[in-house]
Image 1 (cartoon, helix red, strand yellow):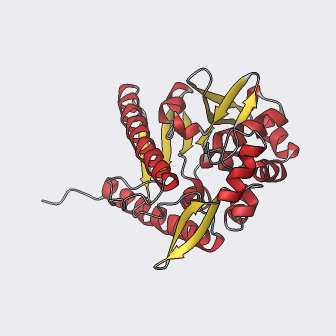
Image 2: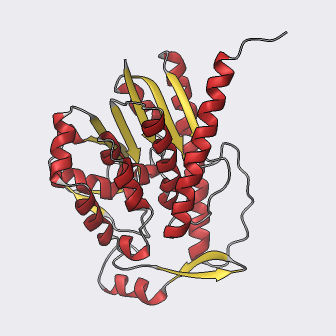
Length: 306
């Protein structure tokens, strides 16, 4: 019986997913045949397919803005103790002068991917016949595509991971094979249905949002923050749709579906990469998974008392 791990998009909140997986894979010794990630989830699946949880934790708790961007379109400042994003006009103007199509450039992220996901790892995943899949949004053909490591060269797979993470127009646009690609979350934020199509009969899906909306956003201060809010609104609808379809498919195909949401709102700015916060979120994810798994176990086997 095939088992799948699905990790949603969520930028820096991927650190929380890492903590959840640490408990599932290291403490509970869960084994998976299929690993599917979208956006930040795509960065994680190669390491997890090889059980490299500690190595992944090192990456996710040591990144910052410079790790991701070679041209950062953001200015991050603190307002009442909270980090607020505004536009870096100089960097954005430079990108436009250079004829680029986005506000910022994330080529440093591609370097990080190629450094972190080695050719040796790529070969070992294929040797072990794990199905490692990333979702990308084909902006040109208006379709979601799923790229399996088993159908890609090493360089192609690294580029697909990068494309899946590129939250345009703030990050780079991947142009490949005559098509333009962007963040996988734009079309498939929580790819549960794809795991079922690939034969999974049990799925652990980590969703980097709360199950019920817990915030009302402050009014936008500028066009940049308004664009963020609109994107977040649309991604919230995509996430809800993905989960609803995933639940229906799971029910129809007799698939056991375990959902792991964040219990609280981690951040409203998931493109802010703060290693201290991400280290905290990793630990929060671990503690949450430990509590949830233990509670679910007790609820399942607790005798009915009358």
